[in-house]
Image (cartoon, helix red, strand yellow):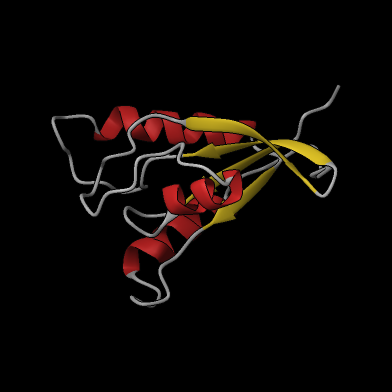
Length: 119
């Protein structure tokens, strides 16, 4: 059975983990105002309107090097992006579009997918 994968991406502290928790209707990801709390991919299977899919939360793109983990966080983000059938790009409307948001958007525009999403 095909299970669509939806990956949540964005810069640090824009609400990616909060979005996952909201859609999951329970606390799965840690939510904290400290940047870099989500370091690895966090995923859960969710059913929405009779459609089952895997939702993946990622660390923030462009985190500063906390304990020299920035490169590993980026590797995990890239894996989640490549697995995705659909990518949710989250920004914080309170901050407006930041230069880092623009860099994230540029990175996402370069993605070449061979199959269209079937969500």
